[in-house]
Image 1: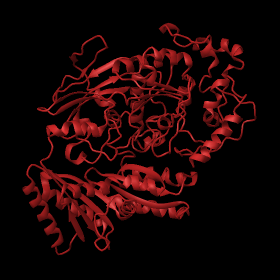
Image 2 (image 1 turned 30 degrees about the horizontal axis):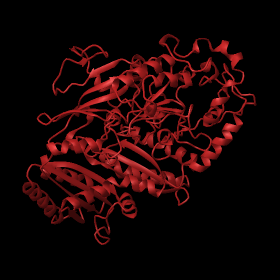
Image 3 (image 1 turned 90 degrees about the vertical axis):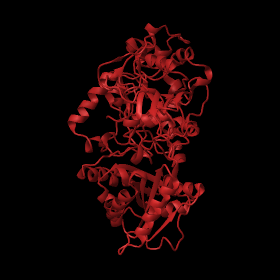
Image 4 (image 1 turned 45 degrees about the vertical axis):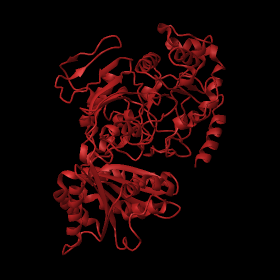
Length: 610
């Protein structure tokens, strides 16, 4: 599909020549023009003299002492979102509910057109200003040199694609502050980007926004082995932080399958859940403080290392030390805001003591109806040492085995199993924990009406890792099998299997099941916190499948008073669906908060809110 889209992008670029004018209201075909933005960039010169007077105050950075490397450069650059076309406008097509790229729209969904009309693209004079802040190696831009920005413009699934011309890689909070101050003055939209491991298009541009990569901000500022408080730059890789605290007998309170690539700032910005939420809770509880750069460049310094602070927030600028003042706990607004309110540059987080003994077991169940009774028994018998209870349906298990993610049970042992559960324990004494786990298995297998058919308990660290690899590898296996439509939802535990089965039946009623359409519908997730990962694996992303899935799935979630996003965030994928989980009053308040922090709408436009 990627090759097909590249060809269409070239066609869009060729077709867009000579049609760009300023001041029009007609934006039909805008996605087609944006596809060819890279080839159109140099063509703004034609007719520049005639347009300068109409640009008015668009001159870049007049009040900030910008170094303009070419006279009138800003006037020759196109103003985003203001276009008319010479050819007749085609009939308006019905607006698609799709948020994925189709051959006709290979970029992300458009942000609010009103906001887009006041945003400007990065120019060469902007690059000259950024060069006064960052070294040349920290500025990647196709405006002055050839750069392959694919890894920044595309998400890892290849589903969401932007067209940014410029990536900046600051190394300090001060540099981030200077960059945002300039961008806010120039109305240049900014997309903060961490490890780019998200699943909802939240960390890639919707169009040609400037990408602010935090990957160079990877310093661990401090760690207190007594309190377990870790303070780190936002760009630190989660696995690196795990490795740093391990020798001090501590663990990170969050664990994700993408821990080798994701960054702690992105984890906080999306309020990522993960595999340890049952034991340690969400990031709203474990994050003690944040350092955030607001859209205007102001630094909000809340890097508290205190577990108890009822005075509210600390607010400072670059020059003024922070002092707690009475007020609201503002850091909570940025946890889960997905970079729409500011850029997280530092995180203070509480790391719990490492368990002295960890065990796990995978159980095969003959029916999903046994999962909840099993969960009740496991909670009662394992009590304080229970740290994870993961659900995997048969389809997810078989795909993980097929694509080399491990084999927990033999073919004979999985016969008749409809689903599987992975249970983990974490405690202070190995013998005590192993005894409790063994007693649990014995009771389950000897019951008059057994809830399980088989079970395997790890006997070594290698086996422990192998069982977890099976669960963590489901995501990778799904991507290898086809093009995944991923829905990260919260629904009552009793409905997990019904949601999966009903979705499959719904797609079948539309004639969309088959090797050349939808190949698999599967579910897995965290029983401990009611989070179901509903995956639809298709041969290709198509409008027909998307239309069948949405709003159907969101309507199902709403009928259960659930959440359309349990831990992946809203991103660009679900902005239109937020109303299925939030009331009009809630959404209106969210928009007011956005306007307070980001009145110019430069922060991650088109994400979270429409």
